[in-house]
Image (cartoon, rainbow, N blue to C red; front, side):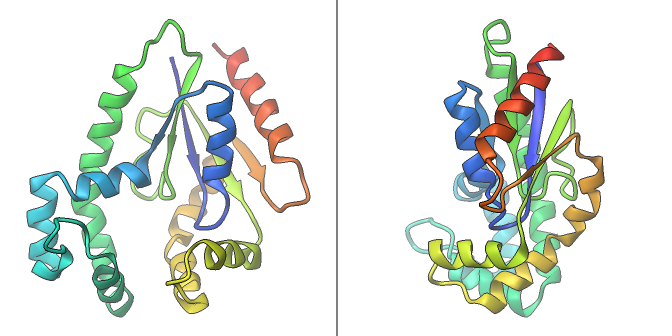
Length: 199
């Protein structure tokens, strides 16, 4: 089975692209969603996160205290790198198990989605990669619409922190432009056809 990675910065529209692939019956591993689940269920991650950021990193319910963590990272950006070193190895191992669980005879390819595919080393064992791009102002607009807790300044800081990943965009095999002018569906269908031809 062919393994495909999809990446792109915050607000680029990765989720929209992945939803189209799902409609084509292509399974998608959402690294960002899984990392959040693992941060609340994996005891090694939980203990290491509390050691790095303090016990207030988690609410009494066991859920991540996202507001607290965002504030700590915004004040001290290097904490994000340290937090990623805790979480990403576990996500990589989890994604390997996910790919192994797929029925190889019935699926032409499967997708791993991650905002930090390259910079976090999540491209391990990936055969093809797709990057989703969009203009910065459009990305900011999208994030503001879906997340009222974030400010434009915070979104710009996230975009800046993700630039390391964007340096590696030249490594990608395919690019999808999600600028609300070009058809995303047509671009996905064209890539789907090319990947299936490699099988």
